Image 1 (cartoon, helix red, strand yellow):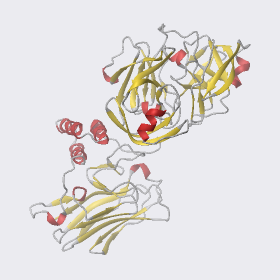
Image 2 (cartoon, rainbow, N blue to C red):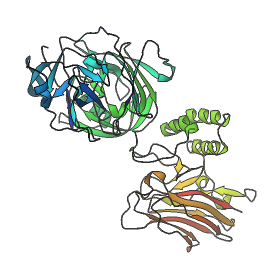
Image 3 (cartoon, rainbow, N blue to C red):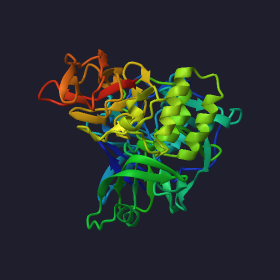
Image 4 (cartoon, rainbow, N blue to C red):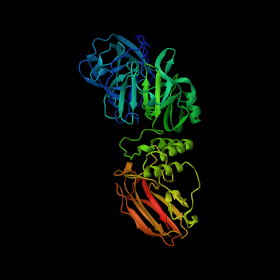
Length: 502
């Protein structure tokens, strides 16, 4: 080992890039470890950690890091590594460190030995954690990972080591050639950055716990600002990769020689890194970041592709997905939800209830135009949840999925002109599934011509109060969600299938 350089620090854990004289493009077909679990917070601001067994039987948690050239171990392990072979210099953002070099110990995943380089260095990880409570004692780097075809499945929470010669790759998604980062650095990179620009290569960095980084010239053009400092950070409403938009992207500016793509961005996909065949496969599963793993939502698997198109705000793709659902074996509820969800992209004028002709016998308020609409957070929205950083699914979800409804985070108010032409309002109300039990609580109130005709008890769990109200002769209808306490956290109120009848 001749020289060592650290390229960046990430969150709580320092990730180290080793440029080793022993690096080689020659791949050896190794024995494949079995499937491993993905730790809960990986891709959600946490790091991807695997438990590796040393040759003495001790287990240590290492960050799985494609952005680090060599495998690195914590200084606390030095007494178990034998006599140092020497020292080498390491650099992190201009700071020079001296690190000890050791012979690489044998490393195992389960009972399967791992292929690595012959040497390692040690570094003081200073009791760092991955965000899930794991004490990180090093990095499993590119010297090892380059031998394997590794799939990261964040939906199934699995890390898979695959047989790249015999695997069926049809479901792996879009293929991107992997190139060397530069002429002196064999770490894996792609030729496109998170602005969708082709230029200096962007390293594939599973050890980066945010979405990625841009060099200053790209970062400053992206944020439309001039930053004199060497680093900066930004949260963008959208970024671009492979011609597709992504929202809520957390990108930093780094004064380095390349751009980078990190774990938080990769985790929006089924990721297959076929390193022996120098190909990255990405099958997009989420436009936004992975949701908080503790937030519960109700899934409709038949609508998964439509939901992705809706989140992308891709009208053409959503229309095609809707046609496919309507001609599939989906249930009537799934078809109805799909129709209403796709319609939220069409931007067609909604009818005012008072203007509907007598032949229209019912009208869902999610399909109607209010005279006034205001909510305590995000934007007033009918028949879907507005785009946000916390919940990827746009479905109207309150323990079950509803085809129509109104997003009504407290305090909120929707006012409709009925013109005295409707007789009955029926429906339910409740909290979004993700916040049931965690909300401070809401009260649902309905007024007819200013007179209160319905008031629920305080709701902070899974209760869904029903209403069936006589509105004969009523001119103005108000749907109000009040805070049940002085606090407003988690108060994602929803009006569920509120429907007018003649």
